[in-house]
Length: 266
Image (cartoon, rainbow, N blue to C red; front, side, top):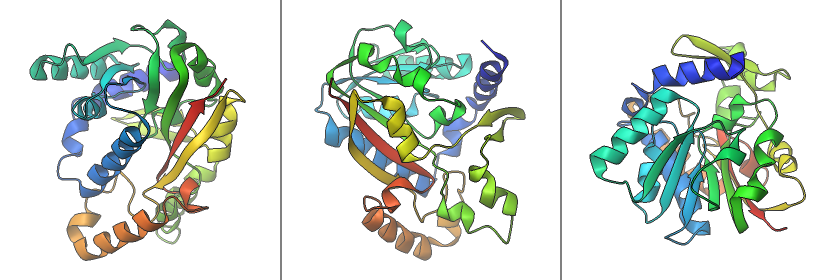
């Protein structure tokens, strides 16, 4: 691995010990996860075989398996893969959930055959400067008509931009052309932000867009756990607005994330 990949792997191995705990009693993060799962169930029949890239601790894989799918979960981090194996063992999911340590730039080496879809949640793909080394492998590992459901962090995040007078560095960080340094468990590595257009372009002409929606357009970002607790009434009103506008242009391509669904057509 290069130095960047090594740093990412180290950071998320350390993060694996606390990752699931952060999501407990986190109303907005739970809502965001449910939106992603809804995108999966809307586009794919139960029984489909899915590949997850940058799967983390397997929390999403576990929840998607509970909805009637089988998942092969991959991640670069040893710690995260260990956490997935623990879930498989604890919940006896050997026939529904498998795990493999693998970078999303090496998908040509993935095990367990071809897939009905490949999904990636919560900006794991923002850890790479260029998405094409990932997308180039997809036609070989997806079945005809297969889907890619990716949750990407875009440059425009209204919640962060609203912090301009409180912390201009946070408010403007997504606009930096050369990316920004992230700090995960005291390990630093560079991350990049992609527009919906840039992401779609990376797929090339073999894919077409069949779904695009903003995720947490006006509600707090995923790292904000306290707002919903401190201001439940306002949070619920923001959720209603968020749900109403998230599929409407231009709100379907901004927010903390967007959910992009691409279909292999040739």
